[in-house]
Image 1 (cartoon, rainbow, N blue to C red):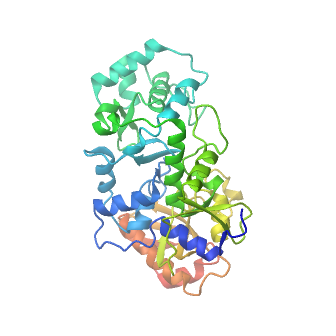
Image 2: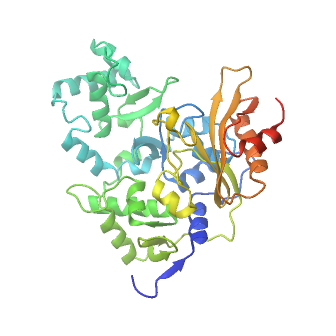
Image 3: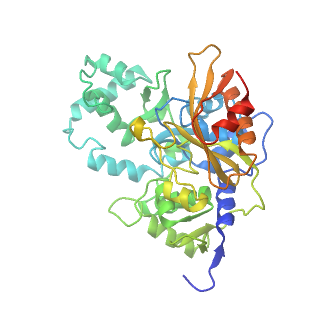
Amino acid sequence: MPPSTQTLSRPQARRIALAAQGFCDPPHATPTMRTLDRALARTGVLQVDSVNVLQRAHYMPLYSRMGPYDTDLLHRAAERRPRRVVEYWAHVQAFMPVDLWPVMQHRMADHRARRGKWRALAEEPALEARVLAAVEELGAATSREVAARLGEGPAASKEQWGWNWSTTRRVLDYLFTVGDLAIASRNSQFEIRYDLPERVLPPEVLAAAVPDVREAAVELVRRAARSHGVATERCLADYYRMRAAPAPGLASAREAVATLVETGELEPVRVEGWSRPAYLHRDARLPRRVGARTLLSPFDPVVWERERTERIFDFRYRIEIYTPAAQRVHGYYVLPFLLGDRLVARVDLKADRRAPGGVLVVQASHAEPGAPAHTAEELLVELRRLAGWLGLQDLRVEPCGDLAPRLGALQGPG
């Protein structure tokens, strides 16, 4: 980098990152579709995950930015005309704005060349044609409904948990990754309903010009940079799961970063404590302060790249869902607590919906080193707000973690 490169302190980088993610946007008393559009413009994508110990992953980032909101807003945006978002492999499985569909065509073409994730699945054009015909006839349908239409029974084996999909399910997934099908919605069991793209996406999206690979790379990095505010090349690549280095047929983040630096959309900067070069988006805000008080999902864009989380917040974060219980440090489903511009605590939460009235269970609560003295008080306010949004009438604090005694005392008997 040239000697004149701007240097940002770690607190400045932190405030820039949080502003880019929408934590400085003025709250709306009652979140509306306009509020949701604004939040989606900040995050760019909403990761989808099946874990439901608290709330599905894609609902939580909106709550963290908008406060308690009617989740039907997201259902409307994803399932009704005019559709605003659609599921695709944008980060991992994620909701993305519908206008990214043409930008993802290069990724769909790569999946087609590699047969999606099912490399061992032999090409069966006749079966693919039958599956497509079944969806065309049925309309939005789950894999079970399509399999029944084709006369195929459900997958018989549970031995390979998570991947014991029927042949029909694998073909549907392949057709989705290559863009021959789209996801119309999910049912109450979280099963995907597939449909033809022309019955899911707005016609103007399907008619839009498809950018070449280089143009697509620039657009994805541009969006990643807006959502990050300031970031390394690695972070910019990870946001839409791009390759950093050039690869045949795929968007390259490195070349796109160079292009955006040349056009002035990105400015090379140094950030205190970062070993890698960083890039500041030209529209990034540096607020004087961030007044946030909210819990973040493990799948929130602020924390999903764990190395970035550690650099910006000095917060080492690992999801422990797949760690044996005896080896967990902080718990099963742990949410960082954002207070101001710092991550000051973490709580292991569970929504016990079988208990009378429903209970938000704080299974463990830990303060971070240097957390302010009023952390427990602020966290309790947030826990009660979250419980209310989830429709849970009670809050229970378990005696686990160094923050639990104070949190439990504030909560009182109950």
